[in-house]
Image 1 (cartoon, rainbow, N blue to C red):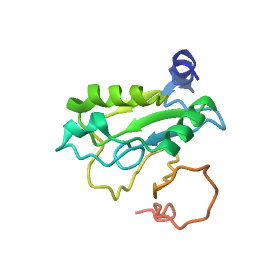
Image 2 (image 1 turned 45 degrees about the vertical axis):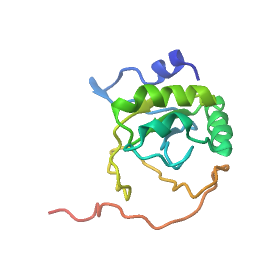
Image 3 (image 1 turned 60 degrees about the vertical axis):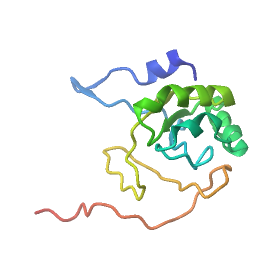
Image 4 (image 1 turned 90 degrees about the horizontal axis):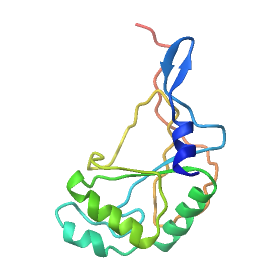
Length: 148
C-alpha cells in the first residue's frame, strides 16, 4: 500500500454529521512493532552510538516486509526518543525495512496495559518472527455489566 492509498484509508471520516476515527478495511492490519530487542539487538537509549550498528533479525525483516507487501500497515513504535529519529530512519533504510510510520517515545519499561476505543491485539515477541496463528487466551477487560 503506497502513501496515497494509506492517506485515502486514513482520511477524514464523517458519520451522522460528526467526524469519527477512520477504521481500516476488513483484512488490513495495523501493526505496531517495537524496534530494540524485537527487530534487532536490544539497544538502550543510553547507548545511542550502538543504534547504527545493531544487528538486524533476518526473520523480522522478511516477515515485516511480507506484511507490508500484503497491504498491511507497518508502524514502528519505539522507546527511542526524537533525538534518535535520524539514526533510526537511517538504520531502517540501510537494512531495507519497508514501513508507513515511525512513532518515537513509547513508554519504557514494558508491562503495558493498553486501553483504547478500538480493538487492540498484542503479541509478545519471544525471539522469532513467524506467521501469526490464532490462540485462545485470558485477558483483562472492563466489566461492562457493572454500572455505578
